Length: 220
Length: 114
Image (cartoon, rainbow over all chains, first blue to last red; front, side, top):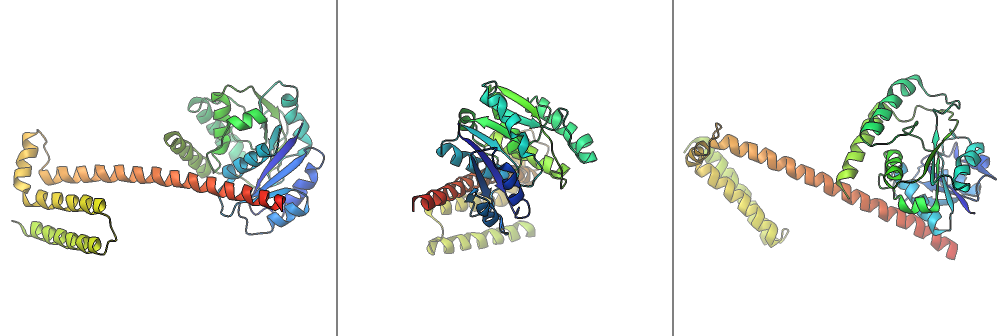
C-alpha cells in the first residue's frame, strides 16, 4: 500500500520544512508542488526529502493539487492525502483520516473542523462565512458536509482517477466535494484539528469561489 | 441630412479606409476583412436611411426610434461578445494550467531518468 501526500505550496519556505519533518513516518512519499514561489520553497522541500514539482508559472492551489494527483497516480499511489503547507494541519491525524480508506469503508475522506475537535477559527469566519458557505453548498451544490472548505482530505486511487480537479483556484474544495457526491463515492468525514496562523479565505474569496464554480459549470 | 449623420459617415469612411490599408498590408485575412467591411457598410446604410428605418421600426410595433433600437441591438451584441470572450479566456486559462502541469511532471521524470 503506497500512500502519497500531496502538498501545494506557494512562498512557504518558513513553514514547509517543519511540515515535512512532522510528516515523517506517516506517509510513503511526499510530493510538494511549488506553485512558482519567489522564495526558497523548492530548495527547503528538497532538503527535507520531498519530491518537488515546480510550476513554471503560478496557477493556484487547485491546479497544484491536480498536478500532485497526476504525479502520484503515475507513480503507483494507492492512497493520496491532501495536506496544507502552512502548518495548520496535524500530521498525527493522517492515520485517522486514511483509516476509513484502508478498511474499505470509504472512497474519499474529508477532514472536518466541526465534528468535535478543537479549531481556533476566527470569529467572523466561524459565525458568518462558514454558515453562509454551508447554506450555499447544501442548497446550490447539493453538498451535505459539516465542513464546506477543508484542505485536509484523503482518497483512494480509484477516486483520484475519477476526480479531475479543473478549478485552479480555491473553488477546488467545493469541486472535489461536488464530484465526490455526483460520482456516488462512499464519503466519510473525520474530525481534525486546525491551528490558524492567518485568517485564510475572506468573504471576497468566497464570492470568487462562487464565480469560478459557475464558470466551470458553463465550460466543459 | 443632419450634421451628426455627416460626421458619422465621415468617421465610418475613415474606419473603412483603415480597414483597406490593413488588408493591403495583409495584417488581416479575407474573412476578417469581409466581416468588418460588412459591419461598417451596415452602419453607414443605417445612418443614411435613418428615416425609413424609423418607419420600419414603427411598423414593427416598437415605440423606440430606429437609432435607439440600433443602439439596444449594439449593446446586446457587445454583451454577447464579452461573454464569448470570457469563456474563451477561461478555456485558454485551463489549457495553460494543463501545459504547466505537463511541464512540471515531465521535468521531474527527466531528472529521474538521467
